[in-house]
Length: 101
Image (cartoon, rainbow, N blue to C red; front, side):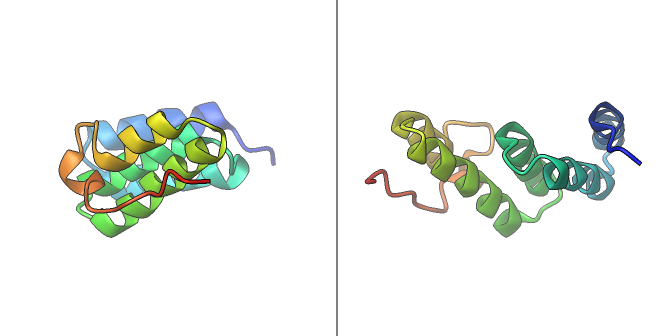
């Protein structure tokens, strides 16, 4: 059976709107399992972990995305993601990403 990304995204959105963050997290984990380099999905998963109160998990996901941005030459974008230029500033500012190669 082939993975249906659109179906997973719709399910995740529905679960998130209902406040069922655990189920939304599960859907995004399926997406990332199928597309490990989908950094938008990884970032969204981090946001869902914040909403679910799982801040350490969220931080791991945010910094994974920031590190990929850094490796790709987007140091400023990585810095903004890691230091909290987002609605989840209090969580994202708990860590540090080195911007040196």
